[in-house]
Structure formats: structure tokens, C-alpha cells
Length: 318
Image (spheres, rainbow, N blue to C red):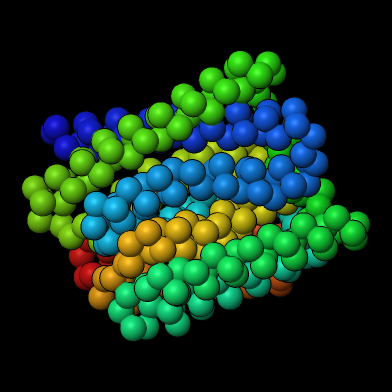
């Protein structure tokens, strides 16, 4: 029970800390004159992935690679199958193909890059540097194309910054929100890892399974909050774009930082099963989006069903 309570408390702190950090960062970006486009593309993108970053970096430093890698792979699976499935079930989402073509392809490419790099069984520092360089290239490309051309994706990333309400106004409250958010993230990460590790040992489940499921869902709560709010407000491009952007940051940025700090072995079950589910879910999402230019309720239900099957297999067969 102690491990379960620690896990729950960690998830709550990560959610609250992520929300506080995002609002403080968005307010700070507006205050210093950062454009809404860049704020949505970078600040919101990194902000919603802050729990994954803190947990994976902490796990890497503690030499818990199964949780560090599992958190990223599991989050990417959950973002598409669980969060987008839930959003589409709430409200069918029509999407503009030009707003998603680039990011959707990059998500699939980043998933393939991970599979290639993890083929050796571990992610080294030079491979981590390659991931980070790929993220830098993507951000420069995305910003330039959206700045210079009237793409719907530019409106989407600008709207992401406006999707957040109740942001702090004064310099003192901005600094306070950032400090409180960071403190909550660090504290939540410590509690989450303690609870996850203890729970895995107590019930005889591998750390990889805990990282791929419970930890991954817990760290994805900020993405879920932003995406569900966007879906309820009928801002489909924001909901889908937020998830695609988060998956790109997770694979190229967070995994890159974690592996650069501490080379990460990749668990055998990730290589045999989870990485293919991650790639398949990204490909399935693109298929749904490009065939009908929308995610319907039945497609959202299919995604949710896929996630239920993945969880069932994670705790039984694999």
C-alpha cells in the first residue's frame, strides 16, 4: 500500500507540476515577446513533456534504464491509442492534412530511427547526440516553414499557446509558477520512481512493464489535459498536433537527453514487442487521418480498444 500511495502521490505532483511549469513558461514567453508560433511549437511542446523528461532523466541517473526507456515508449503508445482515442470518442475530430503531414511523418520517422538505434540492444552517447541533432533540425525546419508560409500548422501551434487559461501575469507570479512547477516535478519524480520500483518488486512485475504502463500514463497526464480540453472546445488540430509534437519531443529530445547522460540498455521485451506497437500505432493514426481527414468516433473507439489489448498483453503474454 505504501508503494501504491507513493506512486499515486508522484503522479499527482507530476500533473500539478507540469501544469504550473507550462503556464509559467507560456506567460514568461509572452512577457519577453516570444511569438505565439514559437511558444506553441517549443514551450508548450517541451512543457507538456516535462514529466517524461524529469522521470526518464532521474531513472537514467539512478541506473534504471527499463523505466527510462519504457516511460518514453509507453508514453508514445498511450498518447496515440489512449489519449487521441479518448479525444475522438468525445468528439470526432476533423483535421487539415497540411497541418499534420510533416509532424505525422516525423513521428513515424522518429519511431523508425529509435528501432534502428536500439537494434544493438542499447542507446549510446553518440546515438543520443544523433537524436538531439534530429530534434534541433526538426524544430528549425518547423519554425521556418510555419513562419514563412500560411500553413494551418502555424495556426495550430499558435493556438496551442492560447489553449491554456489562467496563466500568471506578473514577473513574481511567473517565477513562482516556474519554481513551484519544477519543485513538484522533481518531488513527484522521486515519489513515482520509489513507488514504481517498490511495486514492481512486491508483485513480481518487471520494471519495464511498470515503466511502459503505469509510469507512462502518469507522465502523460499533461498531454491528456491539453488534448481533452482542446477536443471539448472543438480544436481538433490542437489536440492531434499536441500529441504528435509530444511524441517527437519524447523520442528525439527526452530519450536523447537521458541516453546522453547515461547510456541506456533497451529491454528485450521493448525490442520484441513494444517498439513495434509504438510504430504500428503511429502508422495506424496516419492511416486514419489521411484516408478520411478526420478521426471519427469509431476510429477513436478502435484506438482505445487497441490500448486495452496492449495493456492486457503487457501483463500476461509479455
